[in-house]
Image 1: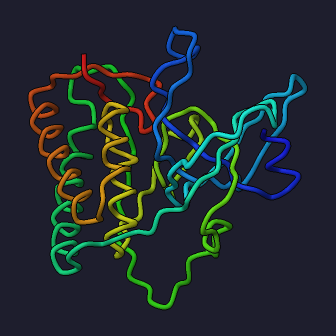
Image 2: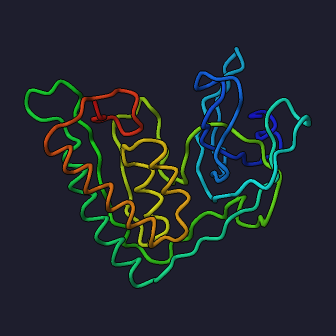
Length: 239
């Protein structure tokens, strides 16, 4: 699948697997809504594995799975439009979420006596005007056939190497982009992340994000977590 995507400069779809060989059962079941992922950089190993830098660009909904055509799953999908909801409300929610997210990041830092590495997360507010976002391969799609990867993912414009302990998080002005950015960084369970992905509007997603940030701040404040080295932003995970 990766070779096909690299050779054809095509994106692939990422979905959350519900059951199948990856979770200990034989049948394969996954969510109907996923993320279109573009490969921005790739490094190949001799054994066929790849290191990939990918960026989620659009959501899609699976119309039907096309069986037997490839050695990997392929589905016919519709790319979903983004509905902000009430724009004024969404912008107010975005400002509130950005402020509370700073507190969340502060609480992710280890306290005195805790043995995990300190997390360097720098939050920046974009102030430059006229900056254009790179055109996305998915921007012109209305429907398409895409190969599927059975993993959990969300649109996220800030991917990073696992070896990089420094994270620079740009807080965007666009409420929709912010809603996905925060949903992708929050250390939450996959079903909760999937629910945020499937939210009907940006306004609804930001309300969900705010509720989760408040929950996480409460738990982190009481240190009801342990440190887990495999998290995307290395930090506390629930015990």
